[in-house]
Amino acid sequence: MIQVIDDLKDALKTLPGIGEKSAQRLALYILSQDKTASNKLGEAILESVKKVNNCNICNMLTDENPCRFCSSIKRNDKQLCIVEHTADVFMLDSTGEFYGKYFVLSNLLSPIDGLGPKDIHIDELLSRINDYEVEEVIIALSPSVEGETTISYIADRLADWSGKISRLSTGIPFGGDLEYSNKITIANALKHRFKMK
Ligand SMILES: [Zn+2]
Image 1 (cartoon, rainbow, N blue to C red):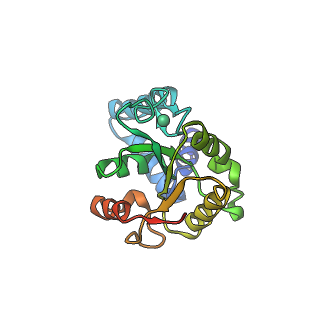
Image 2: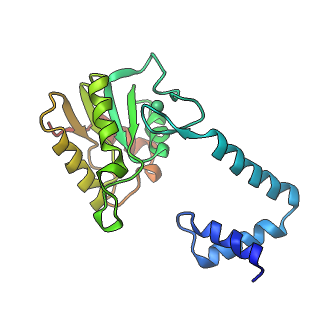
């Protein structure tokens, strides 16, 4: 193929769920549609990459630092909900069942993929819990092998901490992504969260 198209295809291939064929189809689609639309797409990517960073306190993606959740005085500092992705923050928040603060791990522990404690920002999480004198931690991770490994690891690291730890109740299918579960399921899982410590 033409080098410059190949480069675009390779860049698209780095996106989750996009394989060789999809990347090629998308690259050719971008180049064959009206140039205004493609320019808009390119500008939106450049602009958001420039403006969006991780919040210094909770690690979620934001265009302001600290993010609007961390800087809100209406939210309870003593309750901290731990999630994997920024998308999970929006999902949980849309349920209207949680008024505490969040912490985004960015990854789950997965030794096979080389993802260890540093990749889930464990040190930042532990300082966050101490600095803000958090009283309850709610772990809201996807029920998967990696999710369970991460939940046990966090609970372990917090074994000597005096606060409460709870996790979302079942209802979210094993291997299911929080992001794709429906609002009512998440709201129930949050309401009926069970105590680990
Ligand atoms: Zn924040």
